[in-house]
Amino acid sequence: MKPLGILLLSGDHERAHYALVLATGAAALGREVTLFASNAGCRLFLADNPLAQDPREAVLAARGVATLAQLLEAAAELGLRRIACEAGLKAAGLAGATLAPGVEVAGVATFLATVGEGQLLSL
Image 1 (cartoon, rainbow, N blue to C red):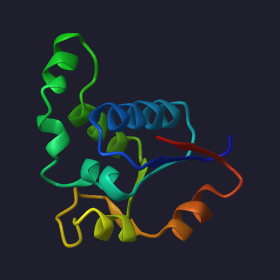
Image 2: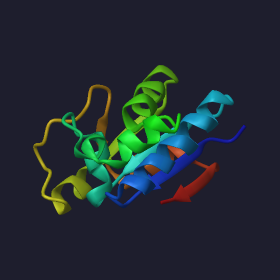
Image 3: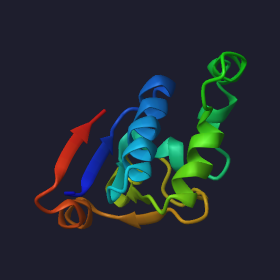
């Protein structure tokens, strides 16, 4: 299967959640997946993840839907490549912020080279 690249531009909880749903689902099916976050989307990769404090997380958990914390853990276990855009971190005022373990900092060229002839999705 061709690699899948998911570009997360938004810092919105719903978009971040679904980016992780798509990424972990594809990785569970054996696809090579890279989740590239830029601008406000970089918040997903912060060590102290503000999106995990969103009230919608409790609603998801109560309804039996995987939370961001669960999906982030699954992403790491599945070997999903997670990249925070260097320029995006700066644009969002997050340069120098502590990122979650395993998150790389790189640019768009690295992301595009990783995906190559694969499929790109943007959220």
